[in-house]
Image 1 (cartoon, rainbow, N blue to C red):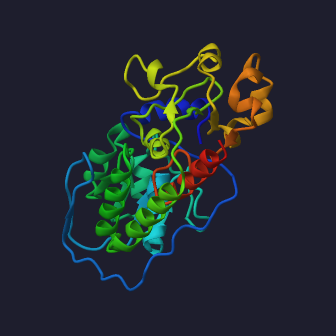
Image 2: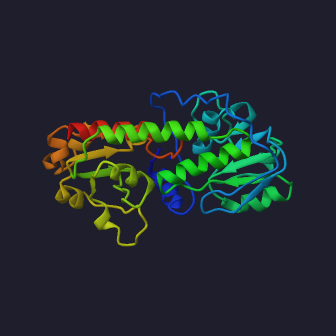
Image 3: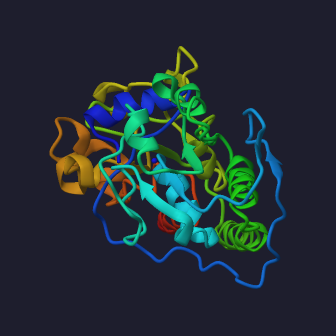
Length: 308
């Protein structure tokens, strides 16, 4: 959900399974859950988008999150008090009980030592699900979202699985995003989204690409995705020739990229976005996680579009 060299390899893994995130940018508060929402009934069976159904007999009271996106969702839903441990990439919100657990190379014994009654993960690396099944710990796998509807559906699943209905949170997110998009005139200008200094990007078929698509922007990476992965690696020559009007950097915190470093790259000073001062440094975390703070990403993109 921060993209650095190791993180890009992780993001490319996430093309099928998961995303990795970290960073230290200034945060905005996550949405406040509505305490008046009715409690969910148990047992409950939940089915994540594109995933397998999972039945929980009782409300989980000791949750371990191995997904930074899921961690944000749990706390936004009001399930924070049930979370006993989160992985080493879950740096938001600040009160999340961060540990050295890894969601990329999970240690089943270390996870089981937290005595969870539910583990939430973004994939099944190293046979995580089967390993925890042996000690009767259920795993809710919430894979990388590919659409905004996936985001809402995953929050709904997470809410039902933890006893905190997501209806109010999802309704607020939908309303906020709809208003931002409605209030921002669409512009069919070209943009480039940078994941790291090796010039990996995203296409319109990805979740992040679809956020840009809300504003009518044209993605220069689409034509370069020969394999259909959604995450092609571009060349400097390609980007310069495409001449995007907007450049979005998702490698500011991780890799120190900025409008100044982009302008200093050979040949990049001729790019419209650079000449016009339209290089936008994103919060690496917000640009790579598909949880409640996607609203913040939409707002940043809208502001850039309005100025283009």
